[in-house]
Image 1 (cartoon, rainbow, N blue to C red):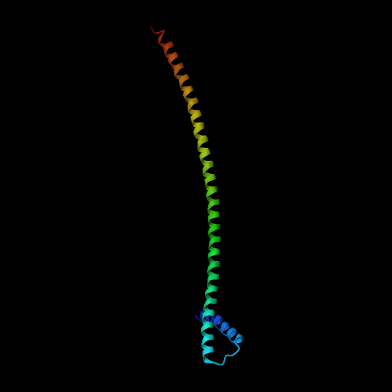
Image 2: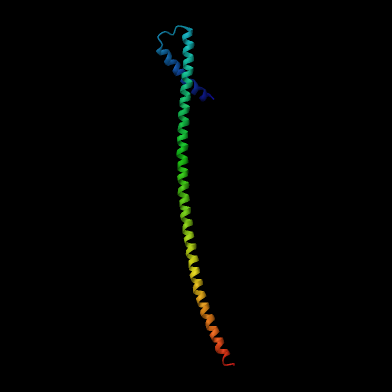
Length: 128
């Protein structure tokens, strides 16, 4: 509370001092009241400009942080997609190998079936 109050009063006091040094005659109450009013407005304006600068810096930091997060997410996603692509390639390779093996196995089965049929025919012929 004390720091916040001094942060608000410091610009007011600085502007009041500056206005008093610039004025040639500070003899009247009207001039003093006017200086206090102008110093209050200028002090408030100074605090608002400072706060705007702080807010702008925070927004700039937020923008950079979000940009860094998006970049990191993009890199992580790229790595994950590359890993998935490699896995899918490996699965595709395994499926093609399985298809080749199945076609070879089917050809062998067909040859075995033909041989068995010939053997059965040879075995049945002498019995007749």
